[in-house]
Image 1: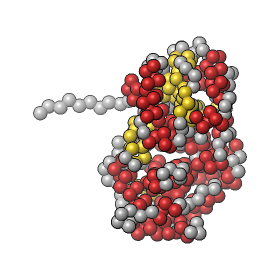
Image 2: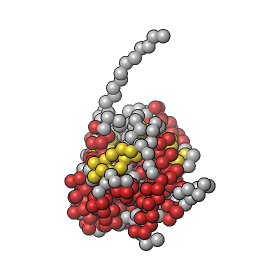
Image 3: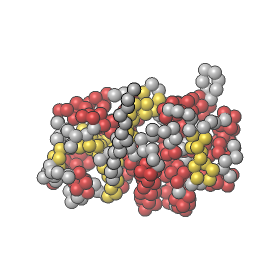
Image 4: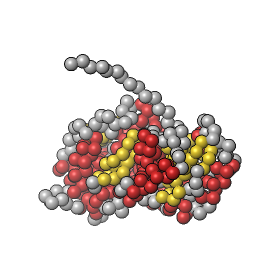
Length: 384
């Protein structure tokens, strides 16, 4: 037997721009970020709930492209797409987007620009990654969660077989443009959701950022703009830093530190039929793993208390009735999240816990009794 082997390295550039009024005619950020060779064609898809909250957004987008027609060509009026989590539960929207990409001759040097929350960005990113084996995808996130976390990552996913993000790709976007003004119409629940990813990334990467979140907790709970902007920018920066320096941006290994608190969160979303939002589920998941870390002697009680108190000060409820759900063997249904998490990554189970704030630790097994104790404590804490 003979073997020919070569190591192949691929370099990616991931850029996240911060601006306000991205579609103001005199704002050059979008046009300058995209039009390396002019003019470029662009297909814009718009979260339908955002278009209802901001009816002036569609004509503003059309005016923007008209003002920059020498650099960017809008191939059709913005296409409205369902942006809720249910959009990820089938390939219907992906097929519709493929049809639009084909109809308007969007090639690998054209742009699919998605304006919306994390679910829409996931669907659009998957469509872009699989049309022509990859057209240029531009994300303009419109939720706190997507601006701080999911919108700046390299993953695109659809739900299938009862599992979240079972189908998907790793495909870095051509650019991400965060416009703080697009958060203005969010309900308090949605503004808050992104905070939990900031707590998460601070817990695993930056104790100083965690202290800043504690300092700003009251301002954040009141949605004070300057505090929110700082949270989003630093959270996005830490996520990009992790993706760029962890040595495993496409998750070829079995560990995934950025999913601290997520093994139970994803399962809670499913058990609630997505009535529990991703941010709310991660808040519960973080609390569960923090208490678990303390229960097995990894994390000191004072640090655990700081994390739980911060989550509550930011407005997160740390218990959901879905934690009561049992499977056919009368075991907590949430425990199935461990098996799904392991299978999703492959290899041995790898769960990120904490030895201190800013100091993550990987474990390869979880003790059901300690998980049950953590759930019981959350239940008591919630007064259930």
